[in-house]
Image (cartoon, rainbow, N blue to C red; front, side, top):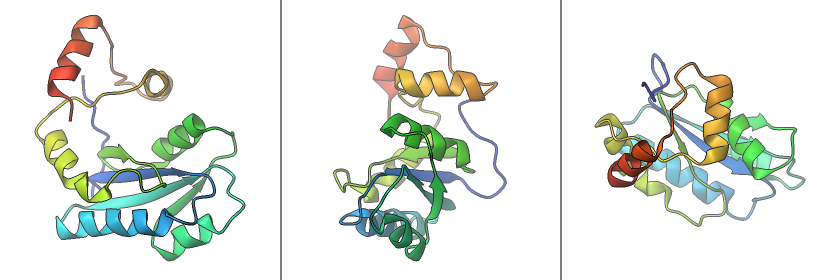
Length: 151
């Protein structure tokens, strides 16, 4: 089973779902961009906007992120819309509220390059089954393997 997307030049797509996150969005995008650049990772940053009414879209564009508009409401829909638009070999998801540190991206990329299997939520598995020929099969055995080797 192949968990990698096929891409010529973009190795990593960083998907940031967003709904009115103008206070923290720029910091998140800048950290993600710095992590990619300082570690020579070819990547893109996607802000999956889920109906923001503040200046989140403008901030994302000014910071160099690609803005993808997701019309269906909900966090899961924003995630799936951003993933569908991603062009990278790997997709890394993080929130726009600065709750996690985007400078950790290279550690995840290192594990993905080494073949570690990512952990997927049920909602994301459903999305992959609908949109991918290489949808992961989840069994109790594979769940255990994921827990041991998850990045």
